[in-house]
Amino acid sequence: MEGSSVFLLCLTASSGVPLYCRSKRSSRQLTFSVIGSLNGVHMFANNQDVLLTSTRTENSRVLWRTFHESINLIVMSCDSNASDHSLNRLLENVFSTMVLVIGLDDLMNIKNVERLKKDLRACYKLIDSFLTESEKIGDLTQCVDCVISNDSVILQECLDGFTQAAESEFGCLLIGGKVVVATEKWWRLASLDAMLLCWLVSSLSPHSSRDYPVYLPQGSPTVPHRLLTFQLVPGVDVCILCGPSPSLQKVELELVERFWKPVLDPVKSCLRLQLRSFPISLNLHQGILGFLLINRDLNKSLYTVQVHPFEDTQRSDIKCILEHRRASLRSFYTLTMLRYFSPEHHDGKIQYEEAFPEGFTHQAHQCYVVSSSHKCYATKTDLHFLFLLFKTNVPTFSMRAIANKTMQVFTKEFNF
Image 1 (cartoon, rainbow, N blue to C red):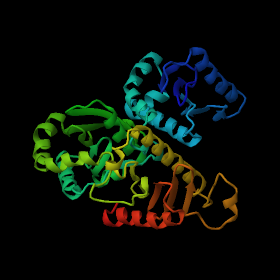
Image 2: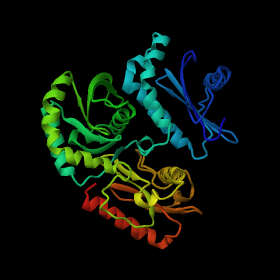
Image 3: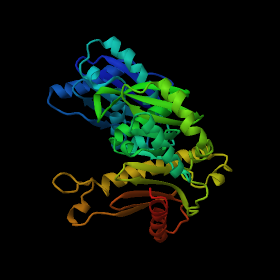
Image 4: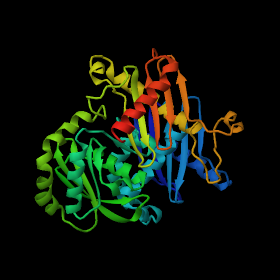
């Protein structure tokens, strides 16, 4: 395998027939013999009553997942930043994407393999978006990526009126797949469903309007809904989730201009928020390179590795720098969530990957990591998680104070 390449395989669980193969950063496809070997070892293990979930070699990882005893997904990665957790999330997102586009019934009851192969082509763009580098992090957190706008009050009022006039309670305003504002019911969708809908819109080719049938993997996996999208300006879409009515033409001709033309300037101003995710008027500590803030109640997140965009644009190697920041913050998030901020199980006990916390009666609420290229700090409250990426010259003892101040800015002043 080539350096940092990833291969994703989808096969039928009963017969092992390949349905598709997608790849990242590779100039070649896997041969049929390799695909057969990867699936064969999994089938052999199952026949021996052994659950094979993952394995590691010197330079790669392989994970297997079977969904509803019908679909097998296999991911093979030699990306040094990949972990079992992130690759498992990838497989979950990929199967949920298949449900989102074609529905659970057709995946559980495969009647015609060739027809299923053809239907699955509609998933490719969204699946590929999970394989490529992204300015979003919802694929890992399974929360909705958001931006904060100074005009959110005006835009929220406009969205609520527009959604109600379109006979729906589920609507959002998107910029590059990130939510600017959304209706109250939108935030009550299952977080995976809401995240996938946003990623779907951003993965599709730009279009003035769409009437797209979707299934909600957690909320409605067998009954489709209609996702209506309207491009207000290039890069900004308003979306509603509805039933058989109203028609696309009615909403486009009667409602879009009526509600959104008066707020066209605030809509255009949202474009400046895509990379930074919050208003340029807000200055954070100069030592912060990136951060991830998660609202645990609404399952929404604020994420950026360009806290100071004017400084970053002056650097010639900015692309490599941003990739390194993304990888560092994603790795720190995975480490922290698996080892220190582990969720409670139904019996009230905490499960950790490391043994040392098991003797303590308290839970970890803060942690930090120091490396040669950066420092990281995380803190959690009842309602939020905050993960910060710092420059190495930031004193370790000051990270807690900076984190508390940053948390207060976004949760108190912006009510995120």
